[in-house]
Length: 334
Image (cartoon, rainbow, N blue to C red; front, side):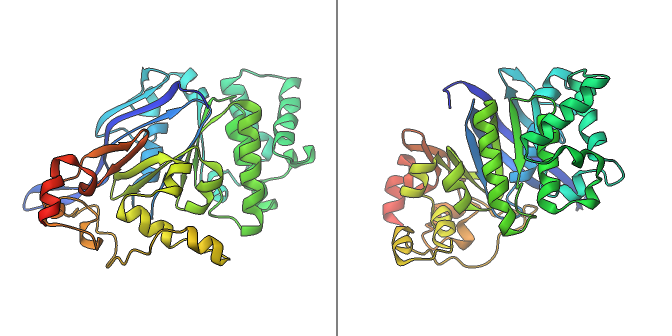
C-alpha cells in the first residue's frame, strides 16, 4: 500500500426522493455527508448493517448513482457525475463485482460472450486474440478453458462469482469495488473466493473498496476499516487499531457480537454493549447522533447535536461526543 490517494470522497450525500409530506418532498438519506480516502494498493473495508448506506456509497463512486451533493475524486480527477458521462478511460480503470453473480451475469450468454464484451470495448482486442485472452482470464480465476462454452445457469454459485471477477479484470482496471462478493455464497466457497481476490490484488497491484457486513472478514483482509450507520461514518481506523481499540459505542457493539469458538477469542472482544431497538429509518433520521436512541452511553447533547468526526489518534477517527474536546465539559456534567 502506498501513501498516494486513488479515491477521495468529500462531503458526499446521496438522497432519494420517496414522496411528499404536507406538500414538501420527503427524502431517504442513504448517504449523508461522508468523507474518506482510499490509497493505492490497499483494501479499504466499508462495513455496516443492512440499510447503513455502504452499497449506495459504492454505487455512487462507480457512477451508477449521481451524488446529491459532495465531490468524488479519482486519481485527482473530479468524477462527481453518472457513468454515462464518464470518459471511456475511467470506465476501464474502475470496475465492480456485485453481490449476487446469479443476477449480474446474463443467463442467455456463454461465459465467452460475457468476457468478450469488456475485451472488445476497453482493450480493443479482436479476432483470434479474443479467445486466447478469455482463456487467460479464466485461468486467472482458476477455471478451466472449456468453461467459456458454458452459460451461467450451468455452473455453481462460486464459479459464477469467479466469472464475475474475471469480467471485472477483463478491462485491466486499477480499482475494483467489491460489493459483498461472498455473502450470497455457501460458507465452503467463501474462503476460496476471498483467497483468490487477495492473490489477484498482489499479482496485479489492485486497489479494493470492499463492502461488507462481516467484521470478522475485515480483520483478515482490510488495511483500514470504516463503520457506517444511517448514512454516516461512525469510526475509521487501520484494521489493527480498529480491532485492538474500538472507540464508538456502535463499533464496540458490533465487535462484541462477533461469534467466536474459544474462550481466548472471547477475551479479546470488547465489553458487550447493551443496545435497544432497531436502526431508525433513513427517512426519519433522529436529531443529533443517529445512534443515540440505541446507545446506553448517551448524554443530553447526543440527541441535540450531530457529532463531528475527530482524530483521536493518528489515522483513528471517530464521530462521538465522548471524544470531542468541544463537548468535554458538557459531557462530564451530563
